[in-house]
Amino acid sequence: MRILMFSWEYPPRVIGGLARHVCELARAMARCAEVHVITCSAEGAQSMDRDRGVWVHRVDPVGPCTDDFVTWAMQLSYGMLARAACLVSEGGAFDIVHAHDWMTSFAGVGMKRAYATPLVATIHATEWGRNGGLHNATQRRISDIEWFLCYEAWRVIACSRHMQAELAGIFGIPADKLRIIPNGVYSEQFQDADADIARRMYGLSEEDSVILFVGRLVNEKGVQVLIEAMPKILSYQPTAVLVIAGQGPCEGDLRELAANMGLGGKVKMVGFVSDEARNALYRLARVAVVPSLYEPFGITALEAMAAKTPLVSSDIGGLSEIVRHGENGWKCYAGNANSLADAILHVLYSPELARQMAETAYRDVQTIYDWRAIADRTLRVYEEVLREARHAEEAMVR
Image 1 (cartoon, rainbow, N blue to C red):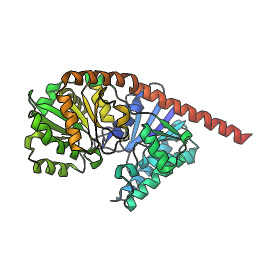
Image 2: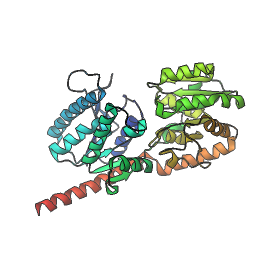
Image 3: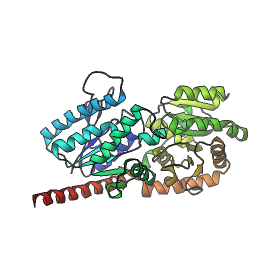
Image 4: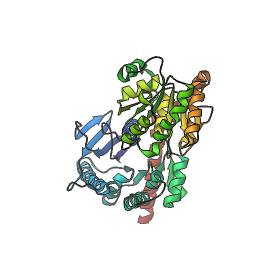
């Protein structure tokens, strides 16, 4: 099978979880298929390279520079389409085109219409969900493009039951068009991590009780709630240190919040971290926290589970499906700093229970969320689409 994926981010360009999702999915698929990914150019990265069996093609937006993000995304799609046309000319048609999120909508739909190639779409989050509604013209434009991609796709993949219901409710997608395939993780990459690397890099001592957040610094991730929970945590656990690994538009506001609350050295914002540093932080942490206010899935929760790091998460969205309270993690009320502090303290004060939950979570990762299994499920969706497309074509001939 010859597969073409469109994604606006792919390592080394990593903005959020989308880059890792597409990267690991493509690598797992490359075991048994020819996989090409067309993505945005990245500083220091080649315009074409081979990544563990995946052909990666990096392109620039086509057209004049613009400050309008939606226009930029359309220009990127034009660049993607131009490269895709070259690939078809050089190597023949693709069997499936898979577009990830709205920013590659026009590239995916363009390939469908130009070459009659079946289109599959994965919607990782919606503009409506991220913002709790549509409040301005830009958000409405993005939501319209999301609907357009879902309408044009033969199948739409959602990462959780929560996301499936959100897509059906917002865009009116019929149930037989939707498929649920979760995100995944490779547990092996976390097992050789060295906690001492994180201690040396970030000035942490063996006495520190590290509370870890990994993710984008945007409002929906709830980092502000985690910072607000720290005074209560510190009143019971003075050795606690919050490490925030990630970057994003809210970084300045979060630093100001921590300073205004007098948290000083108890909150360390370490910025973007490499995979090695991230894995070392998970190994060092006594608890990993996913305090999201909106979360279609929560890939960082899987990372914590794969690293055998005790997990606390908001009881919201896809996280509610991953975490079973008291079994493989601990849940708290979303947006409630007091509830979050209580959950973290419960884990810190119950090391044996935390260890047992982490072991259960690790088994879940191995049996449910392994990328090889996720790739196989996605390939079955492709095969289902190709069968239906053939039957439709035969029916038209008759």
